[in-house]
Length: 125
Image 1: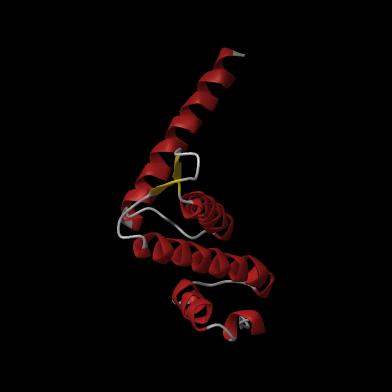
Image 2 (image 1 turned 135 degrees about the vertical axis):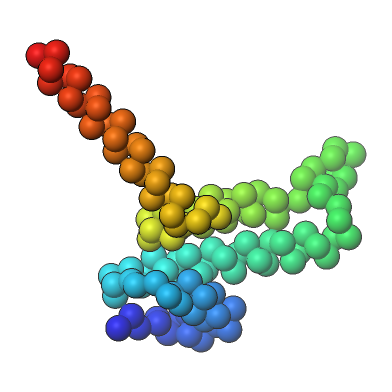
């Protein structure tokens, strides 16, 4: 059984995200650190989005020199998004909306192509 780390359980947002991510999936206890980190990045992303929303739809500000600058939360959101994608990939969490059947069909077609290439290469030798 996968045990939720205390740092995750103690935070309502991360705890709910953990439950969402682990529901219906099978993880090993060794996956717990990556799952905890994934929950943390989801929280960072949500905080950045909430802060951006509080700016009334603006994505930039004018500094004292009169230059137009993007809010730092945009960079934070980009980083969080990249980290979430990487951790999803590492944990085998699909971030595509394809139906599982379609993905397996694509995998089978790819395997057929590789098998054909291997057969051609061996017959050419």
